[in-house]
Image (cartoon, rainbow, N blue to C red; front, side, top):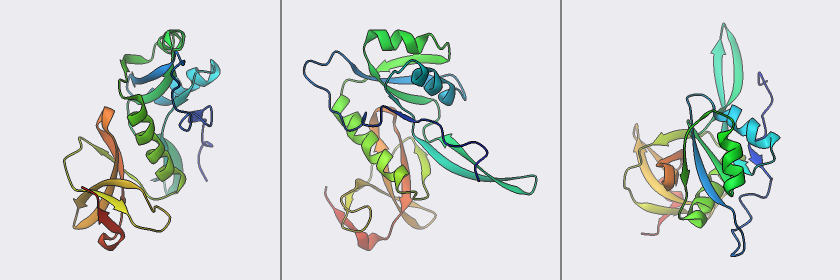
Amino acid sequence: MPILSAEECLYPNDLLDAPLGSNDASRWWVLCTKPRQEKAVSRHLYAHEVPFYLPLIKKARIYRGRRRTSFIPLFQGYVFMRGGDEERIISLSSARLARILPVEEAERLRADLRRIAWLIASDAPLAPESRLEAGQRVRIKGGPFGGLEGTVLKRRGRTRLLVSVNFVQRGASIDIDDCQLEYIG
């Protein structure tokens, strides 16, 4: 049982599915938060109806002999927002941001975030990864993650599939068997 229920981490629910239109004045922004302020920023954006995505994962810990589950940001220090100048000013009014980065390759970021959201929704045990290193690009052949693309990593003698958000050089990885992968170059 979680200490607190999961908060709103995606607003609106179709944010990652809606591509940017040619007439759309909004763009994607990466909000770099002050330490441990990701959830406060997402609450602020939600209260002002500003579209955002904060990838949250479950983390179980034992505290004073009891198992506690909480929801923590997958990418510490980052919240992804979509909007124009008005939404950017609203985000700055939270006083919890260190800086705001504009995203030039919006469709690539959206595709990366969709893959991360898919992994989180699958309830697979994820491990946060930072400072990505070059590796072999692969695709999962079948099963519940069939078609998912990523990079192969070796950690402690185990094969892991890394799904990354290249703009912030962060990602998440899952354990996978080599036989489920096919090389895509």
